[in-house]
Amino acid sequence: MAESFDCLVIGSGPGGYVAAIRAAQLKLKTAIVERAELGGICLNWGCIPTKALLRSAEVFHLIRHAGDYGLKAGGAAYDAGAVVKRSRDVAARLSNGIKMLMKKNKIAVIEGAAKLTGRGQVAVTKDGKGETHAAKNIVLATGARARVLPGLEPDGNLVWTYREAMVPPVMPKSLLVVGSGAIGIEFASFYRTFGAEVTVVEVMDRVLPVEDEEISALAHKAFKKQGMKVFTGTSVERFEKGNDSVTATLKSNDGKTEKVTAERVISAVGIVGNTEDLGLEALGVKIEKSHVVTNEWCETGVPGLYAIGDLAGPPWLAHKASHEGVMVAERIAGLKGVHPMDKTGIPGCTYSMPQIASVGLTEAAAKAERRELKVGRFPFAGNGKAIALGEPDGLVKTVFDAQTGELLGAHMIGAEVTELIQGFVIAKTLETTEAELMATIFPHPTLSEMMHESVLDAFGRAIHI
Image 1 (spheres, helix red, strand yellow):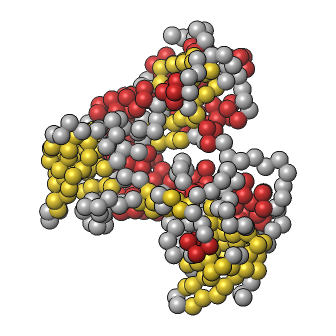
Image 2 (cartoon, helix red, strand yellow; image 1 turned 90 degrees about the vertical axis):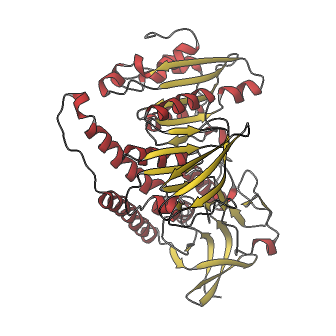
Image 3 (cartoon, helix red, strand yellow; image 1 turned 45 degrees about the vertical axis):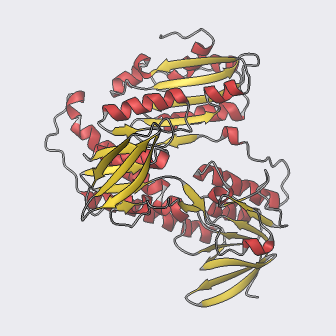
């Protein structure tokens, strides 16, 4: 037996490394096992580098529309290699930051692939060599990977996953994106801004299907205005690969077929949990639809074994994983006042143009609970700051329980809404009522005033519409 720990974390993504840091802060002897790069997929090949790419796209968009602001900036161009390099540099910088945090918190970093060989025992192998560590508590944070559909398998050349889409050798002139969740839409937005002819295919009846229906409709309209072709209620039947293009046969729900040819395809049809080769089945860990089944405390049913983040199921969001990591570490340490995850308080963000953000119940979900509702809306066109920014398109929508004044959900589309949504997240966490929100003073001129106005509108008191 190589070494024994109070807490051993497998996987160093935003769930794993946060769990390890919090455990170390609580004086637990802690280790983290990682088979690839510290920071996991999110930091190295997901959340962070994609936002760097999208920032480059945003700046390019503003340069091309400089005339709208009374400015002259002719001859706008881009260097695809430099755009990708900046994104990779951002990821590398933050991965190095994780290394420093591990050292600062005296967390042992063990490189290699982990496998549970018994209760409280983890074998780690690298380059054919292995050692076994003992741990009183083990936290599984191995994340997930892109789902692959039969017949639509990515090949890394013509058909990409998110990984290849982040490092294109050249910008494709045309692109087919299969799936209109946050990942698919963000890549569609990025490549469309840099001039690609983009087609999006979604099997559900609307884009961004987890969002409020009204917000989805506005997003669809905005994407079409940008020149994207959007097919909803449509599946991809098959791919036919050429030398430097792919022809996809699309089939709509009414049985009609259509062929679309694009230089590259991005498959963004969901994810599957990384549960293989971990020794879970031998320990009796239950797995459903590729995800580890846990209770509200992220416990697997095996004493001392926890699962967090994407591995433990939806929503597949980094901040959900981080919150679970903290909760589990505090529970292991025996801290008092620890609460289980309330998934209705988890915000979701899509960093496309326009941005989309939400928290809580959609209007349809709230109605399904047979609640009496009050719904407020405020358009970006009624906000002075939005007009000054040149961003008049968007909406803030709030959903309240009419009887109690409880904020059930908030849904936004428009500039910077991924930063604004946290205001409503805090309101939900504090169980703020409509009266308290209406009595709150919002600064002027800011985009946040629309949040106030949306609440006011729900109760017939909006000022600027």
